[in-house]
Image (cartoon, rainbow, N blue to C red; front, side, top):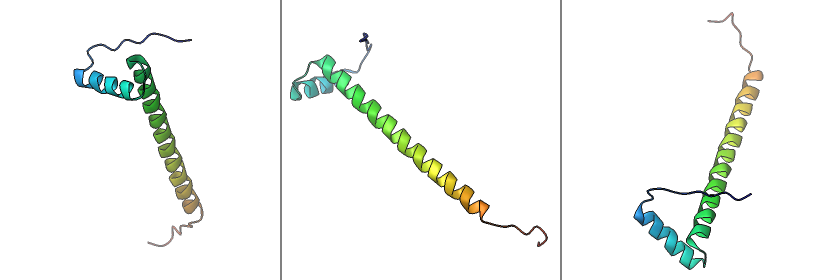
Length: 76
């Protein structure tokens, strides 16, 4: 279901940039704004997913390295 979204007090320069992109892409300003929001969200989610996977790999490696290390508590 589509819903309405109103953006208040948008900087004039941002609106002009969206207008230019809309013209170049043969879209309405509304269609261009939606496309830009979708693109930004996909990139943000993708970047977060990549960072999460990298952190999980680092933690897995660290846990694996610690499991193979034996500590002798009797030595100073």
